[in-house]
Length: 394
Image 1 (cartoon, rainbow, N blue to C red):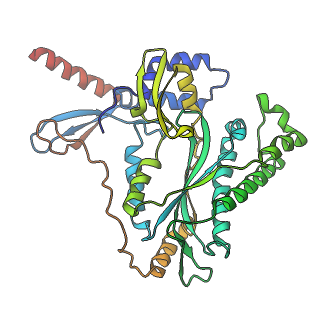
Image 2 (image 1 turned 180 degrees about the vertical axis):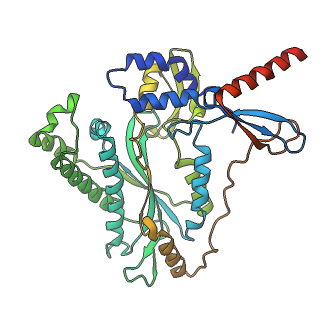
Image 3 (image 1 turned 90 degrees about the vertical axis):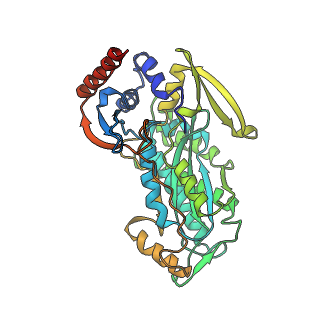
């Protein structure tokens, strides 16, 4: 993919200091850390390394990445490593994509209690799938799957939801056979909605009783139990959003989907269209109106505010495995699943998605190799020397 002409880092460098000064009232140190990391990513401030072409001897200096998980430029390598590990875990069955969405009424509560609410969202959606799948009236099997938390909508506003990637079937209760789902049907969505809603409702009540919820600002009144129930119950009488997408078109399509989806951040650099120093224009897809492609222009401060809505608590794991794919038993249970599917360990594994190759020599197209690590000061001296050489030659 071509280098985008505009990056989130450009907006942070131009407006970040002003934005942080104006937003001191609510800005957290973790937000500042993210903005500083993005601004310094792949600049001399983080040092770099020297690469050399083994064929023609051409050398080049590259800046280091910040490796912050919220940085749009730092996800490719981590994504490729993660997807490579999933190669041997894909079963030779159809896969389904189920999405659970937290009602927008809980958005402010979730932003004040990210760790607790996001953990509840992931666990409640997983428990819903496990419970409904285990019911003999539906699938009657133990399933295994992975869940991915996303907290944003296309317009960058807060929209917490979980994407679940589920094999089409599961292991029977006595672990003697694989129970297949129907080709284009996994579990009844109306049932999933009811169970998911109940689990989130009960989970929120438990968190309140345990004193694990924070109520600040406009939510202060909810710190009283009767007020909290008055807020909670009407939302839990509405129909919640759970939907199942069409099954993936084979294991290779599944892995390409995971490569696109698992390590996303709130917005990619390629969606940015323009920045005039005061406002930002970006592309977004309006799912509420037939997936129409639209453009949105907002102030730089509002853009950065929306971007920071999606920073995750330190150490929070947004990609999790459940059911027979959870924990240390994953390998053993996957082997059992393959055996029940009458396949060997090497069968049914899709072609590997290659990891991103090192960049090529601009002179002879040979892959460059690492030869030296450089500090920030060394990078600045090397770049200055290179520029002097260019100036002397001209």
